[in-house]
Length: 400
Length: 188
Image (cartoon, rainbow over all chains, first blue to last red; front, side, top):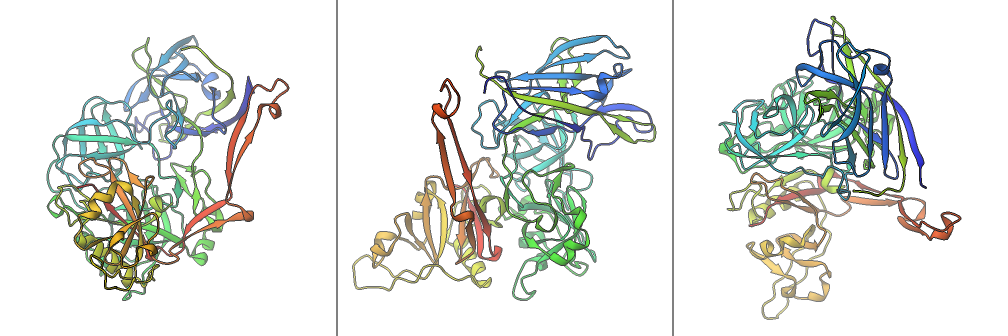
């Protein structure tokens, strides 16, 4: 067992949902975090950025969280015992081929273990972070004490704020404007209606893992009145065309005609198309239905509108068999079936490593893009992802 | 599997100021009414009333699967019947706590809950109210799970390491989502 190489592989930096941080100009930006599936646990991991090995450092700085002040790492190393999120990194300075090294304390490597039993992995739910204000908007802006663990795509759960209709609902982080502020939801899945009042002091926690079993029920934040209604969810749905869903819409959300009942023959809606990670269209004409609203603070306590996957419409799924791949952020959800059985109930748990987007170098004190790689954007806003190689191993270990 | 995929409704009849609230009779009635409207069959037959002090007849019932943490809150719900108040307590299951309306509650120390998921940041307990054949467990290849231990002698020439593992050949699946409802509640 000692010194065993467990597995190795390669991947392209994932930039699903990202855009050129310097629109209209050539630039280099961070990628999304990437999760490696490494069976049997891992004791050491090395990631090499093949693309960045062959080029000088980003001239003028790569973009990290909207600011062009980052260097691009090209080699990263982690071994068991190092703190969650950390990495030893090699990088090249701006427009230079000279190699420098540093350590990052966040945005590096973090063990992935949804069981919550590995003390070095992210816990299922992060520690509470104090919130000082939440705006009354369909995409509420949350102001909080400094916390760098939230990135675009993170899922957070608010509590104890005055927005009782937002508390307890898992929501994706659409934008991160600084280490003390982020915006809930993305431009494509805002709440149907604003919460009703500003939210004051409270807390949020980062939700680090999805429920183990797929397919999953989701909170519904909006449904349009249309021939093929568009349904928006608060976090990535992971559904595919052809999957069948039912709704549970509380009276306070208006569109109760979608609820199954004897009058509508226990209505099942089928997914016609997947617009993006947070939106689908369904084969139900909601034009004459009551308008959908997000429950307001004044209507609390209440249930929340949800959708529940219940199966698959075979004929509809066969129309687009090639798209029958359950994905989130461009990556297939681990353990899911593709094709006609894309709706199959399956346990998606695995052990692995989260490759982070980067963080401040301890010596450098400015950001270094992490082991998830970077994306080169053209002046035409076309992204070209880095190619990265990795090798993971198992070993006995000791020390601190 | 039920926690991840079953549809839910929040308890809203309580007074603890949270969302969901603690469980109340109106919440139980709402779940029973929904299951009835969806034509779910009850799992347990009724227990006929008998001429015994302190007992009450028990309706035919759906099962409600929940955490032992909820026992005190269940005791406080209007119309709750302890299982020792059944006319024939020997018909109660060992894990059963009692009945409210058409729900009979089975409790477990590893009952499901969502951590810090309420409006006030409290744990939200999942009470899975299920009708007959609402979900199933499909065991493949004739077995459900196996726990495998290999002593050190099988692991290497120096017999230094043992290995332990498990494998499942079992798939849980909701067979009819209309017959299973997750009633979510916080503690009073």
